[in-house]
Length: 565
Image (cartoon, rainbow, N blue to C red; front, side):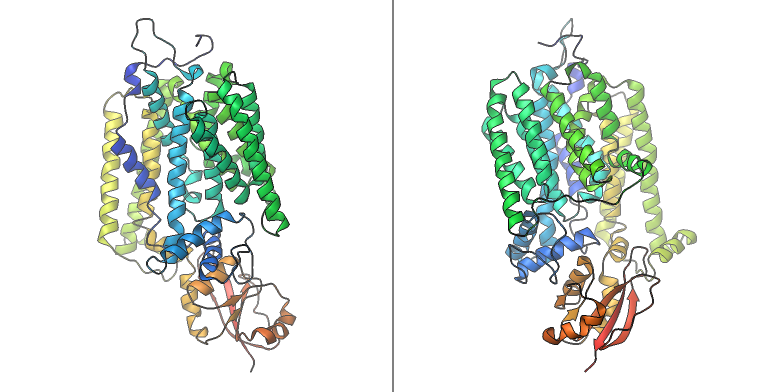
């Protein structure tokens, strides 16, 4: 039973007002769908992973040994490439390969949102998480309270800045965060949905082990075991055996992949970063969930060992700890976002009115200004005014060609009008709903992403795709022959295959041995990646043809050679 000294939540029936399902689903669609359609694979991780998947679908690589141009993936296990490659093969030739590969990963992003909602819902249904009864009645009913908390968690996750770009890429990290969210759901739902929870727990750990995160699977197994053993609920103690089964299967799967020479047990080390840059990364990447999660831990500190706090707290600490151990790697922080969103939801009943007002006004000013700047850039792209803004775009992406479309414009206008309506709704009257303070941050993030993926999508596609540089190289790649590209990135190898239709060999070779190694392959073209200031080298047995770059800040410079006949 709850005790006033332990439970800080005082929630009235009015505070659990239902967020309309159509509004929540529309917000999720505005967050998940933009960026799925109408664009090329983007550099660097996005197109590199797509290349591995595409090579599997074309039959150029074994399903047990993915590679593009002979270069295996840097990590990510094997399951993500099976997933993308399977969709490409199944939807060919009706759907473009890049879109076919993105569809399952968009579904995974939607699944992460749904799993976070259900995790919070089940944790908020536990006895320890229930709000205190009021002296004269009128307290929130348990189901309505849990639903309002779950809505707040979902909105907090959408508002998380770190999920915005990485969550919309076709990379193994999307499958990894899905595995973490599924495990979180298993621990939350065990007393209410025991069969589903067991399946979710075992599946989640296998997914993590086969998608490049076996170490995370081991640590989550330890967390699940500790939480289950410390619980007073018999069903949670019974759930421990399934956690251990899932952990054993995950370890077996990772060991099998390692013995097969694939990406199993490994530790990815990132470049060492200064403490200041790591702190800055964590602050913006986890905004606004981290400060809210810290407030929740303080407010519920007397219940920190109860399941509704311990499960997300330990899971979030794992994601933050792994990121720090890997030198402050941002992709490792993805594991912390769903549990941080859950903790952020438990801060909502205890937030002071002044703090919620600060969140609201910051969101109004920041996201309205961001949307105005996006619209200003759109006008400058198509009209040349303001001249200074148009000149900046020309400097960032020289040769960019504005593309106008009525459909993206109308969608952007509708989203902007909807944002103004949400701002008016939130600021015109006093709202009592628990989730009220998360509406503007989540809506602002969704608005900014949707505007970028409609108004600026052609520009971003030209800046972040390899299509421009391959168009410049096209006159020199006319020969019907394979291409040697030793030392080229997986993204460049994929671009040569996908945009230029070339068969490539990207295995690393010293320059002095390229010609002799080519005797067996018979490739007539050589593509070398160069530094921007590097002089074009002379390669024995090859004649220099051209040197091109995309002319954007993150572009690659390449030199093209033809074999001496």
